[in-house]
Image 1 (tube, rainbow, N blue to C red):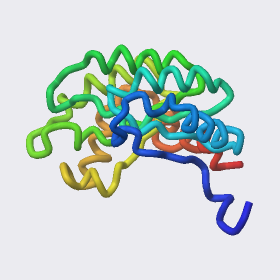
Image 2 (image 1 turned 45 degrees about the vertical axis):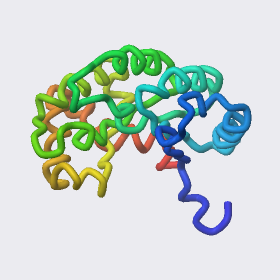
Image 3 (image 1 turned 135 degrees about the horizontal axis):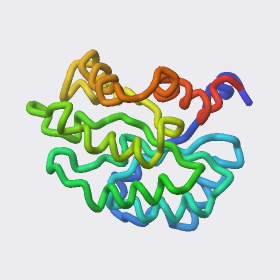
Length: 185
């Protein structure tokens, strides 16, 4: 790779900003994502629940590629709803080439009134489905600052994963990112 190209580990597109919830399934988009995979890069799925059906179909069609769901697919924390988000996320978790970032939850909650208990059902579902080996912490900095100081965001993530073993927490807070993004290679 060219100068600095060895530092590129993944590609992300804000799919949730596309007007078409099936954008990921467009032939040109699929070809481009396939090139990302053949280049050895991960593709981060920045989606909301409305794009999860398309994401599941895409991920199933690219079994040799690595996908990372950003921000737990932005669940409706402020509304307190779990479905259809939880079922669709479970469909993605059933595909072994998919990881998920525990990030961005404080900005999906009521910015000035959220609690750890508001976030817990979403993180618990992700842990149940992906397990500690396919979850990774993401800061969502600086966007997270809209809803909390960064120290609060990381303390919240630690509290939400306090039931994990030391090795599992090490994986979630660094090791899994090293693996999925091939940072040690």
